[in-house]
Image 1 (cartoon, rainbow, N blue to C red):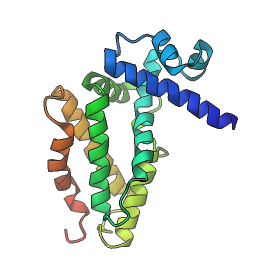
Image 2: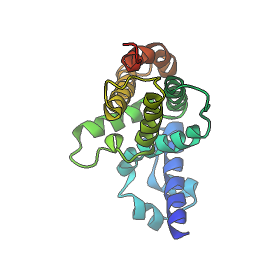
Image 3: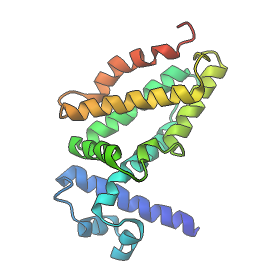
Image 4: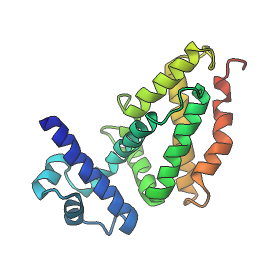
Length: 196
C-alpha cells in the first residue's frame, strides 16, 4: 500500500509539472507552483526530485503512462503493424497537444550529453516491454519477418520514433508530428514485412 501511495505522489508531481510546463513554459514554472498544483509538500517533492531540472527525465515516465493506457485500447484483432502504428499515432498526438517542442528538445538533448541514466533507452520501460510483446506476437503469427531478432526490430522501431521526434524539434514543430509520422513510419517499418 505504501509503495502505491509513493507512485501516486510521484505521479501527481510529474503530471502537475508537465501540465504547468505546457501551460506557462518550463522557465516560468517554479517548484512551489508544482507543489501547489500537485497538492503535495516540499518534503515530498524533494524526496523524489533534486529540483525542477530532474523532472526533464520524467517525460519518458509520462510516455509510459500513456502506453499503459493505450495498451488497454489495442484492438486484439489488429495485426502487429496496425498496433504499432496506432500506438505511434496516439503518442505523437499526445506530444503535439501537451508537450511543448522546446521541452521535448531539452529532454532529447539531455539524453545526448548525460553521463548518467539514459531514460529513453531504459529497456525496463513499459514502452519497450509493450513493443517486445507486439513484435514478438507479430513474428509468431508470421505477420512480421523473423529474419531480424525481436530485439533488433524493437530497437529499429524506437530509433525511428526518436528520429521523427528529433526532426520535429529541429523544425520547431512547424508541421504535424502525428500526420508526418503516419505518412513515413510505414516506410521505416516496411523491412519488418515477411515478404521483404
